[in-house]
Image 1 (tube, rainbow, N blue to C red):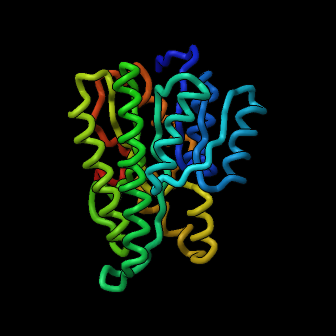
Image 2 (image 1 turned 45 degrees about the vertical axis):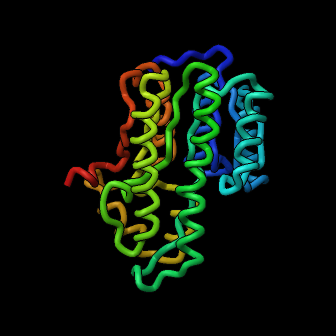
Length: 253
């Protein structure tokens, strides 16, 4: 995968842990300067330190992606600190459901939609403004296999990820002639801290979930991170408006 490595800059939201942290590290390993954004200051600072310890360059900016002024300032600060914004991975998101649709609450609905949809929309809004001025860039959004089909007992989460795919595809077409590519990654179950906490509550989960994937295992955060690297690379220069699954064959069934 070819990536220009001189002075380029990446922004990763939700980078305090899991997929976001792994992706921030993957950018840094390729010589990219990284802005680590999250509301979890402790975890985000740990991500920055891991990058610095490995010889990379990273800065933490606290940002709640639901807040327009904070997102606007995040993009402005990124450009002020590093001089540009070439890649963005809009990864910040939440998952709160394990119930049938009629049991859901308005509070849960609003929280999921605010973070997963409005947050992505706000980030793209201000990232695109800068990339238009700059003359190009690449954006990757964190969707899910739940955004490609049904997700029983996670209906609102699925709806939010379908929305992310709609934003991704529509923006990709709007900016296709502006040297800006917009894609998404669509993971199945990935071995994150969140998954491990759920598995602790439901010990049988660790036995059941791998069998949902034809490959017989769950995914690793590094596998998602490397997929983001591909979508940002020149090797994916003719790829836009695409949701790339990382699902061990799940959606092929």
